[in-house]
Length: 192
Image 1 (cartoon, rainbow, N blue to C red):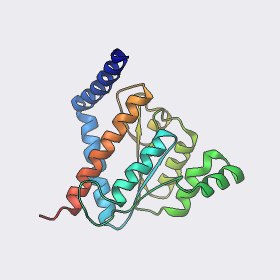
Image 2: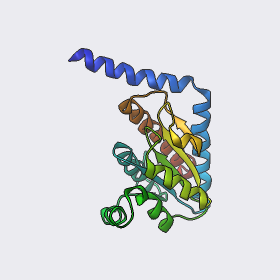
Image 3: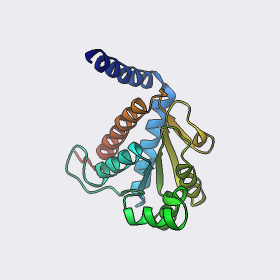
C-alpha cells in the first residue's frame, strides 16, 4: 500500500514540475490572472463551469472569490454554473443535458464577463456548448484541460495540464485555481 501512496504522490509532484518548466503555461496563467483582474475592475463577473470533479472545482473556486482566500476583503463577483439543481434538472429534462450550462450562461452572463470552463478531457458536449455560447456573447473564455486538450482546444485558449490521468489533471487544476485566486485577491484587495 505504501508503494502505491508513494507512486501517486510522485506522479502528482512530477506533473507540477512539468508545469513549472513550461514557460507557455506559466505565461497563460499570468494572462488569465490579468484578464480576471480587468473583468472584475470593470464590474463584470467570473463564471466557472465543469462536470463531476471539475464541477466541484468550479464551486470551490467560486467560493474562494466570493468569500475570501487568504484574508478578509470585499467579495469578488463569481458564479459556478450548475449550482441550482432545479435549473439543471429542468434544462436537462426540457432540452438536453448538453444545454445545462449554455442556457444558464445565456440567462446570467453578459458581454465583458469571463468564463473558465474546466474539462479534463476537453470533450464534454455541455462544455463545448457553453464555450461557444460565451464567445457569441462577447465573453472571454479559457478552458482548463488535460494534456490532449480535446475538442475545446480547437475553439478557445486552453491551459493543458501535462498529464493524461484524470486525478493528476484535477489536482493541478485546483492548484492553479488557488494560485489564480491568491494573486487576484492580493492585487485587487490587499491595500498596504
